[in-house]
Image (cartoon, rainbow, N blue to C red):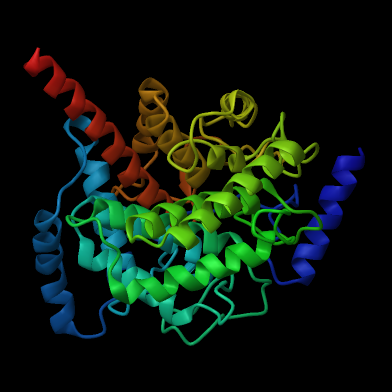
Length: 415
């Protein structure tokens, strides 16, 4: 009863702050917001007839210039996800979360994952373009707004800032660097890295405290720090340590490593062993996946057990997952959180688990092949489609699984 009251109050506060009131149980079920013609009818559509005629050809050339990380039955969904990411990315590097309405803005979180998806599929220039946009809109203290207009002119409203953005950007920079042929972070992105690193240090007092209270991927107002804010900052600090070490900057590499280690200890102390959203309350949510590879080393048995419990407790009737165990009980599955479990399963040695969730995502695409934000209890797609975060996670999961299959094939042929 107490949790229900708290949830209702949180929804009221969220509505008052201009956030998406996602915790209200009597909200109507979402609908599918767009159709197969979204590329020519949405706010992202090419402005001229010439562009509309050229774009499909250019997109096909772009796709084959990289690689589709899949084989067999899911090649179609991986290729479509890449095409959708390309179409959602503006020439200035801004990545729209979705085709229209309140999704036609650039979230640093989504953009970070899209940059990594581009880098790991051979589209390095696109990855740098996305990160370059984030460098231009980054705040002077190294942090980010919750979201930005696609022209880079600033946030569209007064939503509170979201501190996880700096962590995700640092993590993405390290992944993009690792995917490059020379494994060197481009000089033009080092300012983005250094400012985000300074922000992560300030937010955590160099690993001596948890970050300040901030909204996270739930997009609701918070009164206590969430795992979904703390975990990305730890991942970002670890990524910064590796980048600085490879550049020979031992001082900052050690500073980042110490801060990351301290923050990891605090996360274990304040959130473990159950790893609920607010530590010992709020229920398990997808934030626990952010404690798994490729965001963290697989060295916390309690975190791994919590990660395994989350999809069991958050399962919805259509077979996907809710963002959290204490999310509203409307039966709707959310694809980003489902894909996050798939990605972390693939990266942490659970390929069959990853295959299960990827098969589910594949089966719940729209009729034109894009990945929607939500899936209704009866299995119908809903919300905007495509959704950039889901599409990027699907590409990254397929990339991880393809690398594992390649390794197995190589070991078999070599034996």
